[in-house]
Length: 167
Image (cartoon, rainbow, N blue to C red; front, side):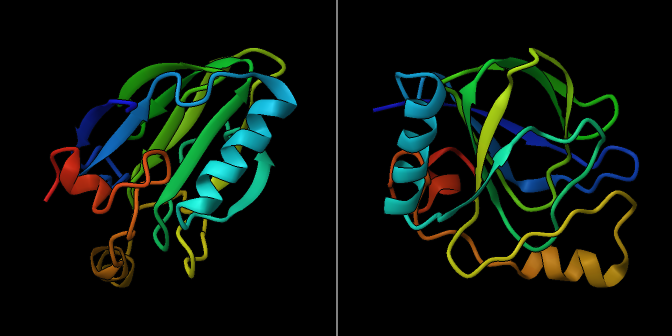
C-alpha cells in the first residue's frame, strides 16, 4: 500500500487552504513514466471514482479550487510545487508521484523540467474552477460545504482525508 505524506496548510495571505483536511502526497504511486504512466493514473483515478479530466502542467501562478477536491498524477518530468500559496510549502515531485489536494488548497508550479506533465482528476459530480484571489463569504461557505470524496483516488480506501489524519 502506498503511504501518503500529509500536510495541513493553514490560510496563507489570500489563499484559504484547508485547515480541516490535509493535502496528501503519494511518492511512487505509479511505477512508470510517460504515456504508460498517464494511462495508469487515468485508470487508477477512474476506477476509484475520480474521472480524469485533463493532461497538462500545473499553472505557474498561485491558485486554488473552490468547487472540487483535486487529484494530480505526475506522469512525466519533475517539478517543485508550492502548496499553500505564496510562502507555502515547497514539494519536489517526479513521474510516478500523485497528490490529493483538498478544496481550497493553493498550488503553483515554481520550477520544473520542460517535459513536466500531470493528469488532473476530480471526484464524480464535481466541477472545478480556478480562483486567483481572496475568497468571498459565498466562496468560503461553498468550500466548507463541499462533500468529502467517497474514495481516495490512489488507494481506493474510503474517507481518504480521515485515514490520513484529517477529520
